[in-house]
Length: 318
Ligand code: UDP
Image 1 (cartoon, protein in one colour):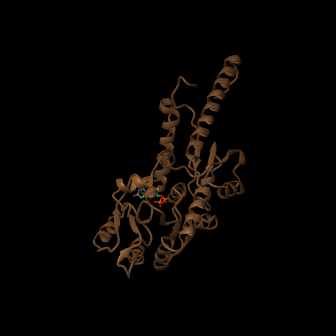
Image 2 (spheres, protein in one colour):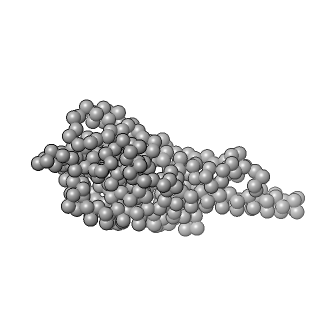
Image 3 (cartoon, helix red, strand yellow):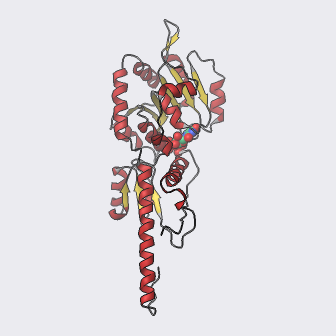
């Protein structure tokens, strides 16, 4: 009932950046949607799971003891029901992304000024999840060459590298003498701004990074994936026309140079495809659905208390 506030406990593994990003997304969306309504502990706990893999994932996520299992895509939902989870417990809203990604109005020109980037040159964002994984250094170096017009001695693009918690990477990159404008960052907290200031992204196949890039309409070059959990994210992006997969740093760098030159139409088309796939409201759909469950539970508890009052001899446990 409304007189009683409720508490939400979010359990996550603080590895990489994706789990924390989705956990914070859900917390923020609860605050935006329900303010102070969620605080105190409850006697009976609703137990839900939020899956953050876009396609293939480990079957332990499909635990049948959950009240709800939130799947980010139909592919995952199909796997869940094939594994024996009742379809009535499955919901598909998309991968929960921090509300700052979908609620803020971001203007590229202003972001570039704020982030001290070149106002004109097309920009590529290079990253590798919360830990700065994958062939980031090699790719950055290759872009340093490919985004320079050798004849004119002028850059045709600029580069932002977000190294996350990988400090070796950031200090190595900072020591390089770049011939194009380059920004090298450690762990950033305002990812939506960096993505909003750029025109495409190169990343390992991390699901949160992919979902965020789709919301910002960034065409994606996937240059790596964590075996097992991230492999399915590759066809999700490529088959939907929102990006390409390339493990070769040289090929990636020359592709980006073409996107910033003769193949700009291709970049635009992929950007539109990315926006079509984006599900910015997923996090709000998830918290509203949890809220509905909490309300239902409140009602059924009142009912069972009523029935206990009516038949005192019966042992009706809530
Ligand atoms: N991230 C961030 N700041 C950084 C680097 C990464 O906020 O400097 C966030 C990124 O926006 C995304 C998450 O960390 O939400 C990375 O998750 P993903 O699933 O892509 O990969 P993981 O790091 O979990 O392997």
